[in-house]
Length: 89
Image (cartoon, rainbow, N blue to C red; front, top):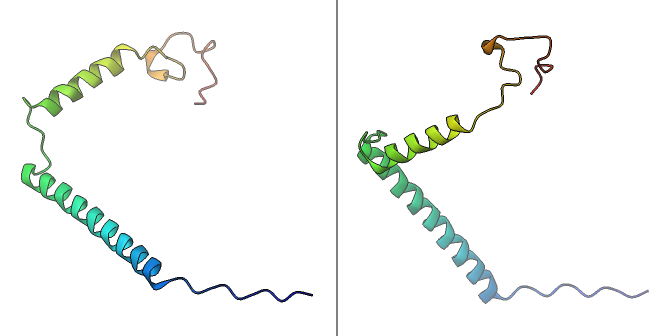
């Protein structure tokens, strides 16, 4: 029967490097979150109606409604309810 050797202790340099990377990552994420919150606070959460974001949202809404052709399960449209789907999504 062989006795397993104890695992060597990790070097101090590797441990320090790991801790430093963790701290740097945590600080970067905290900074990014703070910048995002300050941007929201600056605009007070509102989007200018003549801005680029409003134009992009309007375009996406137009594209979404233009290509939506599925009427399965849409009970507000009326029509023949006997041929409609089971209503499950």
